[in-house]
Image (cartoon, rainbow, N blue to C red):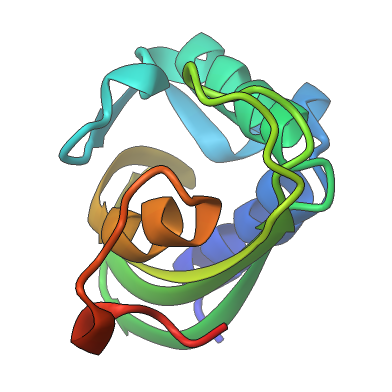
Length: 145
C-alpha cells in the first residue's frame, strides 16, 4: 500500500466514519479545495473540511464510509465509496427524517506533500434524496427499499 493510499484510507476512517474533526489538519492541506457539483457546503481549507464533516455528523450521527474500490496513480487516488447513515438531524436545510440512507460516491483525491489538496467527485444525490423522501422518482428508477 502506498503512502497516499494510506492517507486517503485513514481520512475516510478517522475524519468521516469516526467523525474526529480534531484531526483534519493531519490529512488536509490549508489550501484544500473541494470540486463537487452542489459542493457549496464544503467551504475552503481545513476549516471548510471541518465545517462540512461537522454538518454531516450533525445530520447523520452514524455516518459511515466504506471503501469499495481504490485505485492509486502517483499523487491521485480514486475511491468508490458506499455511504450509509441515519438522518436524525437537520442538514443543509433538510429536517431530520429518521430514514436510513445507503448511496455511492466516486471521488478522485489529489495529494501533495502528504496532504489532500483537492477532491473532485460525484455523490449519488439522486438516490440520497429519494431515500430521504425529498424527491420522488418514477417507479422504474426508485431505489430498493
